[in-house]
Image (cartoon, rainbow, N blue to C red; front, side, top):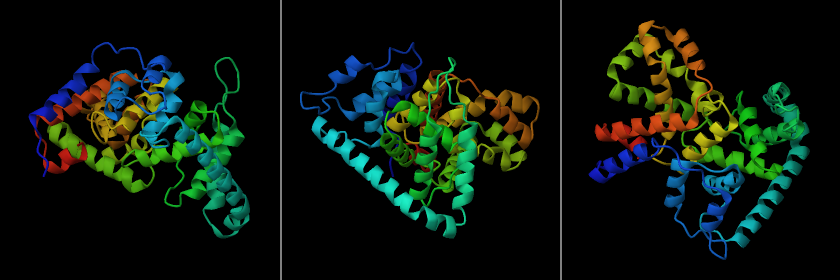
Length: 336
């Protein structure tokens, strides 16, 4: 069994404290380029880069390339030439998948009972998207987005399409230029986030650990929630399914949190710390009004326009508190 060392406790406190001070400027293009040697190999360690992303974030001009490392689209040990080859291979593979889909589409329509229903749901969700910026300029291509979502659904038999996936995919289309990049980044992103929305059992695991975390850190609140039935926690399913994307005031805030989740810093499964921090925001209201499950859900749904840096800071403090209090082994292992 792994034990909690003083070094780990100090590391947790350091992760929590450095982000509470005024955040340094995000990693910009000049700094990002300085991380590579003449052959395009990273000269900085993965740990160094991930800690800086946790502390500072990424400038939009470097986000696309950095995310390719964070998701596993690129190897951290790759050279510039190797990355060019990877891009070419991913494009060819994507085109091959598109060709395959065109060939099997009639078969899916006839034999796959969920295909037509899912395709209709995707089409409906896509049409509801607002595709223009405040100036009225079209910023997303709905037809391309629908095609990529359908392909993603067909290629992932274990994944049920869930409402909100279209919003997640839209964020990737806004980040990159090419459809094959949008497709592969989305696939790698879902696989990279532990206990994510790839399959429902992953979301259930998040809810289970969140319940255990509340019981350990805030037993009084845990007792109140238990008195309102299991649904009080289970109703937070959308938080984990969609990784909090509807809680923030801007796309930049969503990207900011997601790239922190991809770093694995300050701990694994940081999304549960984030959910705990959000629940604490409405704790006083829940207790004061002795809310039942339905009202708790409404209070949680009203958490919008959040600032990602403030939420990350709060979640880092929760992690530091947990490590200081020597949690039971199953809970400790989930965050190591």
